[in-house]
Length: 507
Figure 1 (tube, one colour):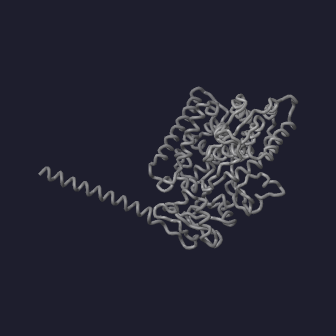
Figure 2: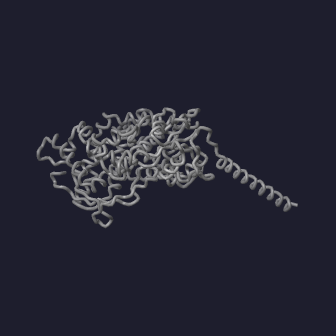
Figure 3: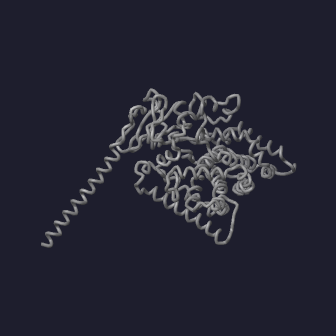
């Protein structure tokens, strides 16, 4: 009897588990196969859509998806699915204007979801939602990158750059990887400005922080977009990295409080403003994402491009030397010493050639799509079509930055595009998107420009350099930029510069 009852109970349990599993599958199928239809008035749904996944080219061939989608509709705008999410792809000048200027489209919600909810670490102190995080982040960043705050810290920034380059000068000559060395320099400068001097001053802590930051950076995956509830390895690593950063910031803050120590850095400012450690950690990582991934890559890219363009190398170095000559107080002072003593106004106003080099590097290196979301409760018109309420919106940067009708030979690095007589970036409305436009300009633009000017000026002052392959042989072959990529990033192929220290008077 007992055996029979046990068998009967086992069958019941098995049946219950089967029903439970079947229910789970049914819920999954309902959620991911029965996707909300696009309403009348939305752009045409393109053919690149699959069950569950939607338009899989969104994850691997974004440029191709936009080119194909644009060709399938009369207006150039198109609709597609990412998992079960309704997404609108906008193109043309009209679509671009709505995307960047319409106040109703949410920047933060678009990026949070279509970046796999991993573009920022867990919002420990922002349970009110994305809008609360965005408001807090913008407010704090504006306060920290005010002109007076940036230039008060200028001597430290210059000291950081010179200290990082000095070992290469001591070696006299050699081969370096700019996307490693310069990227790390920019990370230190950014940490000093929007983070914590304790980390910026300690090479070991700085390296640990960079490693954790890169864990978070790499955690944005297609799986995170499709199944945000799934505890994937990337998501677990992200949470672990976020927790480690939290503990590191908390330790520094508690030590300052215990010892009565204060410092003139962003961490102290945020503590004085009453922010919690969770808010501070989220802000710092968000600020690093906003600045490092673009500024670090483009600062390195400028040196790479200059190494293969003797005309602009001469112009950029000539500008550095001319600025120094105008402000030199000691005729015998080395160039680097003179640069270190430049007034704030010189760094702000006297490097137009370096600025054009940066502008062109940004045009080439900026890739992928920008995101928004319509969460207004109403449809938003785009000509005779609509962006449905609740839909996500994307725009591919290449539509303007790599448009041969705006930028002839768009794959070619040519800073003269921005000379007044050419002004290619002024040909059409919002032809240049590198610093953000419309409703969302780059809040840290002044600081990013300063970082690049300092790094480029000292690099040119201290070294002669040329592009070489992994064997040290001279080459003019630049790494191919993946136009299907999702954001600025280090080249897939390593880049090498062969350098030699210039005359002592030069640095």
